Length: 286
Image 1: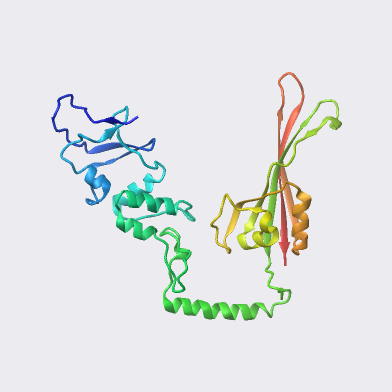
Image 2: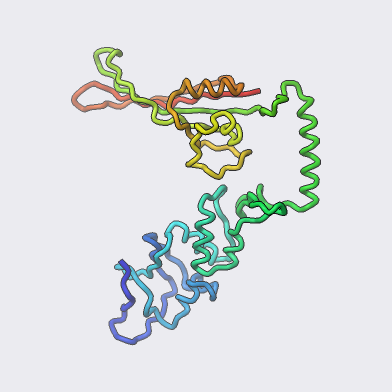
């Protein structure tokens, strides 16, 4: 609950801002310097904390200044205000929401950094953040050179034995699943198996989509570029045989597998044990 500032107890008395300021942003607590909050004078925070006193600013029940915004994304807003630079994790999924927060806090330069780039073909480019140097925009000469090298590589690849003429590329796909069952003390016939909850897919995005198509659930990693790898996809069905059939139809064959297991007692009063295992199968297409 946010409370109006009335720390002095004397009506009308001006209360200066402390050098170290505590903030409550959407339930997340941040501690920073007063100079950081006022480093961008025209920003919302700069205007809020450039007043002559703390009077009129909302506070929570512990006296911290309260801002009703996304507490998780505010860490990047605060980082930017420290040195006017932005560093994001690789493949940051909240870029659009962070841009909206930057607009709210009136940080136009940050909004420009987060805005998607438009290519010459008037399409949205897959522009990465400053923390991902692989996706930085190359110069015109570099693009021309890369295009030349790419054409040469494609010509060489067509001469390599075993290269596919139908456009299918080689690569690995790993599928894994976690299972469990309860085993009674009398005999193994008492084993009670549970169904496979989820079949995970690990590999290059383009290969996973090619093999599994509409049966691939991409909701946990929806914006992964085609040539990048992921381990967060999973299948919409739970039958291993069905996954094996799709891989076989696409020309993959199994090259390795491994499994790990742990055991725990199901009940203190019995000797029944719960076994939990995780198994992976590695498939490869030449």
